[in-house]
Length: 187
Ligand SMILES: Cc1cn([C@H]2C[C@H](O)[C@@H](COP(=O)(O)OP(=O)(O)O[C@H]3O[C@@H](C)C(=O)[C@@H](O)[C@H]3O)O2)c(=O)[nH]c1=O
Image (cartoon, rainbow, N blue to C red; front, side, top):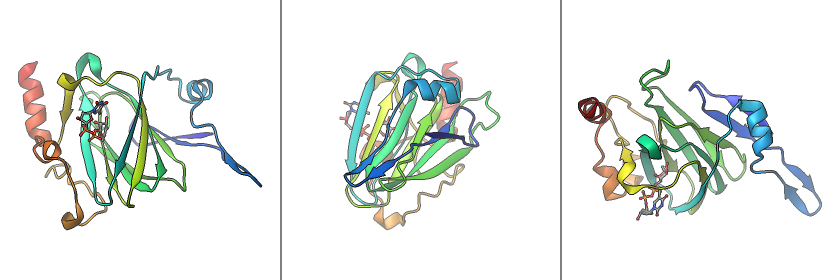
């Protein structure tokens, strides 16, 4: 397993070692010991999620706030996505910066997303299966988000606007500016 730093502090790209033989292949999809050795982090994952999406789906940008903030370890087991994070930690050197990477069944890449980042992905192949571990439980009241087409972030989802499929909830999310103003007002 290789772990590469990304431009966003605490966000790592993980490339599992795949063993191939006549039967097929094998890989460790998570090893807490190796993960801690290579990153210095020790997340305690408590929830595993899976979504299936049609080509053109955009999910995000999502995060949970406060005591329900989540780190996530995300991967694709069928199909391909463009996975995208935005740093929302005000004290971070990369505050408001984004990073994206293609995750696919073929490359087996995983992205570790620390708490304090917004996360989303666009689906580049039909019936993509997206799996992820979270180190905190789902808590509806702590869910927050930023609109996928935020004018300030100007994110490239690698999709034509006409092909995009979004939930009503995601279409109605606030812009980054609206979210940050709201966060400031709440103290
Ligand atoms: C995220 C989540 C949703 N749900 C329910 C709520 C809702 O009825 C249904 C679908 O939820 P959503 O539309 O929020 O699903 P989705 O848009 O796939 O949400 C996910 O998006 C990606 C980008 C993330 O980063 C995740 O953390 C998560 O927010 O599933 C749970 O029961 N548990 C969960 O952990």
